[in-house]
Image (cartoon, rainbow, N blue to C red; front, side):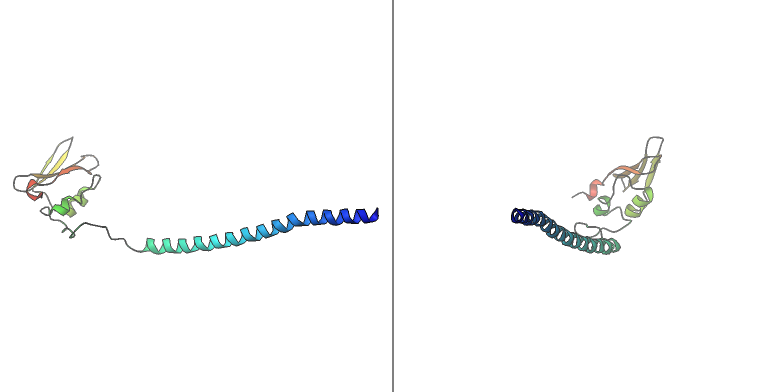
Length: 137
């Protein structure tokens, strides 16, 4: 009987040790994977920091329009809703005529005032515009 106990004990130890070794090797694999991922994250964070520090130039189609010149169609196409009056003025220049009431402020450009920009009187932000017909292709 003592030899049966010994065989049983040896068998039990073998069965018990195998999952422990497998778990240990799995832990090592996972630990290495975590280290690799931490390294990748650190590299990506460095790249993001470098990109955030680099000034981005806006993408424009064709030649860059001149600032402050309402006679350039490209300048009209730089307008965006929500821009301030200062932004619009720096893009198009000063209007030839201004009309204002409690509902809207309108800036007009051109001899026949065919180009216009409208602003909300409270926020003084661009709400819309109409390109001069003489500049349209």
